Amino acid sequence: MVTDDPAPATLPIDVRTDLAHGGRWTSLRAGRREWLWHRPDPARDTVAPGDAFVDVGGLEECVPTVRGTPDHGDAWSRPWRRVGATDVLDCPDFRLRRHIDRGAAGLRAAYRLSADPGYRFVWAAHALLDVGPGARLTAPTGTPTRLFPEAAHLIDRPWPTGARHLTGSWPIPGGLPLDRLGPDDGTALGAVLTDCPGVTVTDGPDTLTLSLHSDAAVPVSVALWRNLGGFPLPAPYRSIGVEPMLGAVFDLADAGPADAAIVPAAGELRWELRITATARAS
Image 1 (cartoon, rainbow, N blue to C red):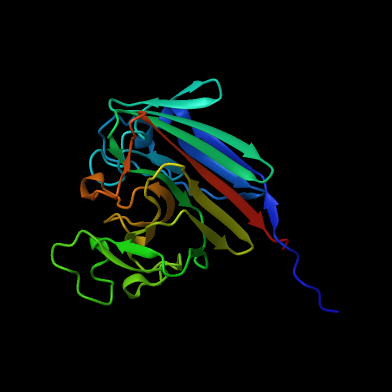
Image 2: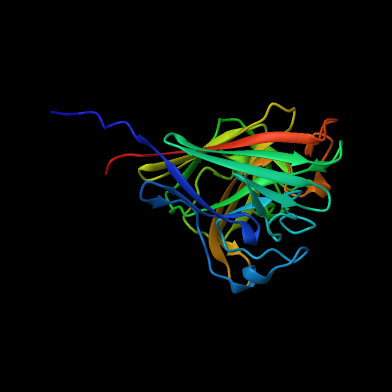
């Protein structure tokens, strides 16, 4: 007798954060699976604002930029504080508040950024995931996907002179099958899936879905950092970043008029990151 496979079970998600070190998410666990990738580097414990980024994995809060200055933003190198049930970060130009709710059907992280009206920024939940070579990333077919100059030698066309990015269609922009998250091939590249509120990562029997929600008129994207042993030289390693984002570029300095979030006249912008996970019985 042939029976259908059981439906995947939705799992509660547990999260741990490190307020002293940039509010970093150090664990994102669903059932028996830890989704966040890590690497040791003692330099992470002694960083100061303005330092070059020290990559130890996890999920970093990158704001007001990802690439550029300051490297990976201002949040990751500053201590946060807890006020009631809310995590608070104070930076020279803005205040960021984060409230994380856990439930049986997933996790919600509500954000509130306060700054002068007109303040422009990029924010990313810079999540580095521990996934195998068979993992895949699912997004709506045809999603406009921006590639950046590190992909110039990999794409199926000449890179336009002076272009800061090139746009193709998901899942194969520029001839690159970016929905495949491995195996390692010595390459490293970043991409931004624009006007894309959410994606799903599938790795074996497990899935992780990340999505952004905001009532404000802000650009909502998902950034992908697919480092398959190509970065950094001379000692590269594998790291896979799936990063819900407000904005449409990595570097705020490259943002056009519609490529960054802008604080409205009220002086405050709100958004929410939602994460769900499922697993099939093995």
